[in-house]
Length: 460
Image (cartoon, rainbow, N blue to C red; front, side, top):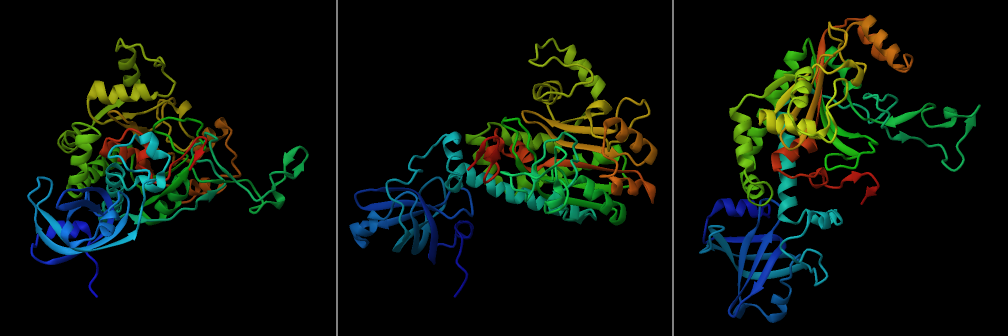
């Protein structure tokens, strides 16, 4: 028996006159005097295919099964379509209702608010918006793997359970088998001797620290997987569980790192644009006007570059009454980032050389002793999507900085070993898949680009 065709394959073939079988879910259905119509999609492409039922060939009981949301199998002849939306349609000869939906199916309307759809994540992917988002997510993920593979990187798999907090922000999820209703104590402190790992353990907030040893043996590596942050922020760009791309490269300095980031963004944008034309057109029409121009600008214009010092000066002299006044030594807020990328540059921009006081211990200290060799990539309307740096390869500098920040040297002793034996300059970056997808789709909330969002106080 031949493999069943998808709706996408049937629409591409346009081989009219042949018999086809459509399997999918009814998006819309309506009944006229002589014919009934159903738009059927199977998730393989944007929209679906129109199926026409001659009422004289089907009983009323059969046609009663044409309900929005119902799963059906329809066989018939592929014919030319007089409609504007597609060039072919199916003239139905048989209908099987595989799974009825009923009048209580939640997606009866054509348009629903995103807030409403977040409450039914198990069904929302059946809508045009979320179908497009998750198909684009698939192609973006493939682009990521292809980009690194074509450049000699090795895909590595770091642990999800770790004893380190790579970002040093303390926003980790603890992993334990200790009974929470009777936590064992010793001298007023939690006694981890009876815990599974015999020590405190966390879900990973970043794969960077574990990727560095692999890069210092394999040369160029990348990780691509879930990370977890117990960030108390409840904004449109924060999730507790999200996917990160984190490459690490031996013998790369910060300039090399920045060049790779720009090349990466351009490559993935072009890849998505080539394979998600229908999805981009849909988003451009219904989600973010002018989205296609965003892609064109990414591919045609160079990214901007500015130091943190210069960025603070420009923010302070902008004449804008920011909610958070820009000050040297403080992090850039989301409104600062959006202004720099959206208003000052009007395109993606790299901000480099942040103060060491607001960055993690592993970033290479600059010659001025006050900044570190790092960069954030800011994009219009979203803000930061990439954070990267040259890693501190000098043992004595890393040790001094760790002591200054109160880092537990025993816990990271293995990390310091990398600086004792065969240390080299090396760099890397971290990029959140969801934030990049927000930029490529025009979707404004991170909850709408991940299948089952986990956010502060919510886990549906």
